[in-house]
Length: 467
Image (cartoon, rainbow, N blue to C red):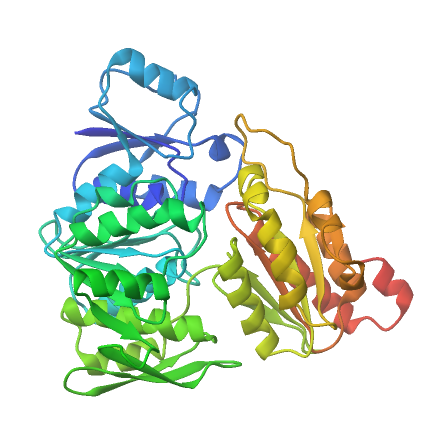
């Protein structure tokens, strides 16, 4: 078959495109970010595996295409979407194709939750790959040191498949996996009352269900659908006991049915211990030995932009790049940073105008409680990915929501962020850069670290002012 992937550079799209190519299909794809010269690392990787990249203008859409796969981030009125409909091509959304792949797995495992999915799936990918257990894994973020884009491990077509199942586009109910996991349910992409039915339908469709008992919403699903529970709750079937949540590593003990598993994770934070517990249980289901899980998790490189330490300067200023983009993820990232630094300089870039509107009231309440008096906060201007959206809110307005004593700052662009960090940073600080979707955020984090490294070696204010 011949596939066309519209929005192929997306973190959920490019692993699927690679999988279809690995399974012998002809694959082509387009993305407006590639037309703008962005995501070139992803483009190079797609070309290396034999995927043809085309302009995102509709000219590549023809009757030779058997399946037109589109990202839910692609608007219905783009030239490609119009051309596909005009030709009567079979149009398949990314979540629908992913659900087909997962449901056909032997077994298929779908990892759901409003936070932690990419890290859990990344951990599973690391465990099965390093333990030489054949499996296909599809995730939303690459492992640290393995480039940008999504996570992809290819296994036999008839073998196990592990993938993220996301609620953001309303498609969670479309999965029917042999094993489903619900890590948490919180306000993200929609109010709880709006997303709760999706998780209920997902849970009902799973052959077997695992849930995090430490999350009240997930635990309620577990009771209703007789799930195996894990986590820090004393009532969990597989109880997690935390030894240390940081500041540099997270350690704990997971009690299994017949033994105790030591979890030693190089990434700090209670949330990463919970992620590791979930990943360990999935890996055991796929045939990874418990002893191997212990050894391999201790060497887990981390997932790109999930509290990824870009570097630490000679004066002890640590720069961290993080994908946090909702209230709970921001809370987890900031508290983890605070545990390892006397002062945090936090930067947050909303990942769209809709998300900025949705999060505005929540962040107005959350940030003054979350940040300590010595911490500093900067709102970066909202990321615009293109397309037709109402630009009726600005990060300048979000900054004005914050109390004066917080000394919140607005940055109009990435260079303004860098300049603000240079003006504020002190020895021992952690600089935490948060946000989703913008492919230039990792580059910003590296530039900030490079500038701070020069700053650390500066000897005069005149030198500092030239950074």
